[in-house]
Image (cartoon, rainbow, N blue to C red):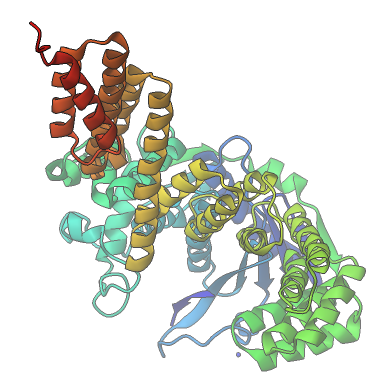
Length: 582
């Protein structure tokens, strides 16, 4: 769970909770209608701007759940204490049910809290949409959107953050900049000084606000960065040299400072539908926040109050179940999961917990194959129900992939089903590994090679895993190409075999392992010469056969046809020796 700090509490006796839902977010709050509406306007502007930049046709982001407290003391009682004595935690972010979950208070530093929320939602959303943005790209994009403002009918994106140092004056050396990770001293801590974040903001301001499609440019950038590294990815995408990079960004700021997006605030407000909800909903969500923050005692207090109000409501049963599962009391937790589902729960995490438990049952050593098949059908039904509730949920796809890999029988249609969950988010490598294993079971060699190549190119895998997938990719590709060449040779299509080989030699594998393709070229030549020898024998061209056989044995001394060629040579010699009577 992520927290942002800047420099605790009970609810009032008469609790009043409200809920405001749109397609982009759900706010649950004990604040006034006016405060909830004001916050909703700001957040709606952010989501509209985000969609205009990043969400393509057919794509959709899950709604963000926002727990908005009336008082900062109520919020602070349920989140982790800030590590710095002079600071306060003002906004927290997490994920549950495959949705972003934000919490803050309306009487805190709302502007700074919104900046934090916008930043988190930006890099969370980029990951969910499958951009696979590296740290510097997601961090920079989050910074660009964190300062979004709504004024006079427009959302303004790209306003310069006040505390950032001068980009050019404090610039990090570009090759080093692209190597920085969250563990680097330049990223966080006393030595960070904001330089990495300032440089990431400037770079991504250029990438996102230049003319043209931001989503297409960002997709191309992320793809190029994966294939060529961050530095080369930027240079190739933005069409500049390393020496020109800083100057190009500076020129951008002289021409472009912000982008304005029309925003119809009156129309938005007219569509708001706020409803009063039970305090059990608010307390259950507050308990969830406290549990995610590690504040178990505070969460238990909220949960007890929620149980006293609505003990059998889905929201209360869901939080109870997750509390028991987190405590390791699985039987009680799973029983509560089943009760929540019976009460109408539509929580993906609840269905996923049931699926995980059932999957463990399928691994019982005493179960027959038929029993395991039946159990696996139940597991898959539960996972598919989760994906109906939350399409694109990575946790559900990871469990689906695991189930496919260990199921007693694999089915070809599973490959397409699992592939729907593979994007370029943080779980991409694991899902590709699962698909590779599934395709190995199904003997779908072409897909195996594609996934092995992808995994061999992933910079974040261990050295051992990298070597394993690289060997599988290289060896498997060469074997595939040899098989294709051999099939053409068996048909006597030597020209086609050579043409296929020439194309294969220009591939990544061909360039990485030229010796392997040199051996295939020798194989084609050997087989063509062998066929030629057989043709000379049938034509009884003994002199030509004798000469060709000698050349064959000199060129291919270890050929499997060596003994046969030696016999042909002797036969040719016998026919070319002059008779004694002449």
